[in-house]
Length: 245
Image 1: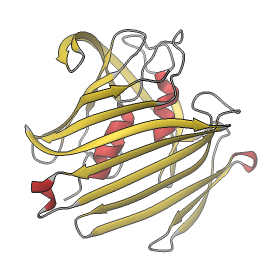
Image 2 (image 1 turned 90 degrees about the vertical axis):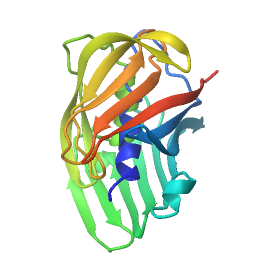
Image 3 (image 1 turned 90 degrees about the horizontal axis):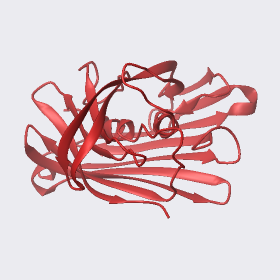
Image 4 (image 1 turned 180 degrees about the horizontal axis):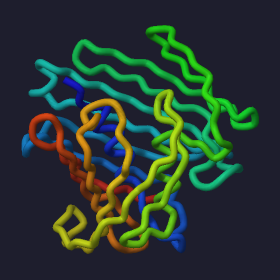
């Protein structure tokens, strides 16, 4: 069973979509309830902070008690950026994924050497290593969607960005699909629905569409995300939003 890594990637995708006139807010924290076909399976959070010229995004996912009895999950993914260079959140510097999902463990890192146009991939468990040539504006999956978040998004348009996803460097698009009014923890709000065209390993691998609901205002808060999986669907529902100052 592949589960929470895909959920973590899913939650990164939900952090996209603020119009160009909005200013990035740091710090900010998003907390989600994760459900599978209507059954609660865990919680996840994503937080962006900064100290000096370094910005950091930290994502954590944990299974709840009933799931942990047969499939314990403890995932942590961190990305760091040089905020003095490039567009928000900054120039990518380091990415680390460390997960435990049942009996499966993963520990991977990417070191971005932007000046040399190279990213160094390292698997700390298997010893696998690779140096990947990258364009200067390449960023990891997490940072890429913070970047997209502060673009102007229009229905029918598809902004793009260069990302390094594991050992794959590619340019991905995010489709802006439609507008819709839904009930959320913030009340009943107008939203804009987007579809990231990215297929990462994990629960969403090869399963097709991911839909994300963002508040249709200058905050562009990701309030819901949903995707089909092998059996049923996974939904991330916002339960708490802690904005920056």
